[in-house]
Length: 575
Image 1 (cartoon, helix red, strand yellow):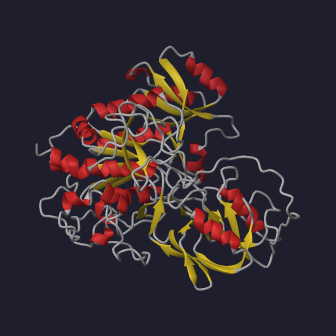
Image 2 (spheres, rainbow, N blue to C red):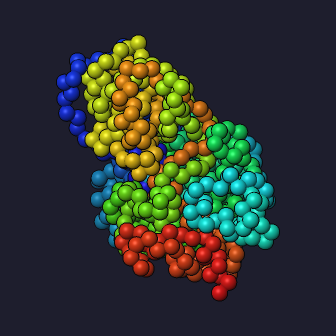
Image 3 (cartoon, helix red, strand yellow):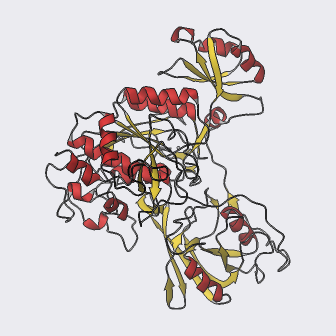
């Protein structure tokens, strides 16, 4: 939801705010330093069609006609506008209009209403000739592939009762169920995912290969992370794993489920409601039983609401991330036809960022969730002072590499005078995680003062706030997040030599309701594969009735019906 890898995945709990002037030292700006995010790069045609307002004064709108016979894309075109698409489920044309063109269409008696095409965020490349090479699920691996989130929802006890790393014969593993992932696309060549892929479509670039990249570079890995939570394969991991992982990586909640990929989020982290609706329609056409959306925004739409209702009425179970604002649910999770999912931490407590509301249905793991990312785009971190190693987590989207230097206390990194003992010869910056200064601003400020690596001290005790993302790829330095207690110790070490190292991996930890939603989608696939005759409404009711209550008995505002439980839901089918 509104976190971004700078999308809807790794959560950066920082708020934009002004910085007070720091008088501890004179401002320093080293020459030749390039710091900051790179703009998302797409083809000129794709980018121009996705930008809400360009120099011609046009904006994106959804034009709802009174009936299908009234739909007239040709009439819209005659006004000189750019028609982007015609929706299938409703008499709706998506187009870019000037204010005068909008006024003229609004006066058309065939037009029922016009509304903005709302942006959503997640809270494209040369490809193999045939990426859709789905294979039977690998049935043997290692129990070390089972993540804490997997154990929390009880999935291993559904398909590996002996906990030996072998899928039980005839156990429900999601076989026969198609989950349609409406997200940023994925790394189609990731070894954990290739066997599960059965189809895809790119609504950003307009082709059939939903890579999470543009013509000039990879995206931020959001969709790949979400896909791995659902259907990463047992015993077929990536080449690059961290030392504490099994060599085969991880396994998803439903390793036998098949994945359809609808790419609607561009590399800049934005999706339009019209593209999401088109993706949802495509998922229906492909026969997907489940649609999983780890994205959202704060404004609802009559047309979008109707599209989700139509899909649900036709038998699709729609699962969406609740949102990362800590406040009201985002859309589409807030629509009644959607199963909204909030996030809990590793102690089964509601994550502070997880949105709330009466339409909240279930909770699932959403803090420091380990899953797949674009190959070699994940990192693992090391922090050393002398012979002592300190626990840390990489800043998501920080580059791999290693740097050593004297540790300089830069406070909250809010200005070019925040590092009083900075030198353009290089140093390692320590900053406190801030509610006031965005992480990219902290990074840019310390980099311009000569920092070659950064250590960020958390505001809370270990694990309380999860992980931290820079938000966008760009010109950054290696960086890590340490706990509050380690941060206090680091601050006392100012002046000592510190070594920071980030290694490339195919996996990463991420936090957000984006990570919670696919856990529920995976559990739904397990239940449906156990009893294919169930309707979507029955699957939803079963998951809600067997959830582990986390608050007031039954439905409550903060945690819905509770933590989704795969084994309990499967057992309930036997009664």
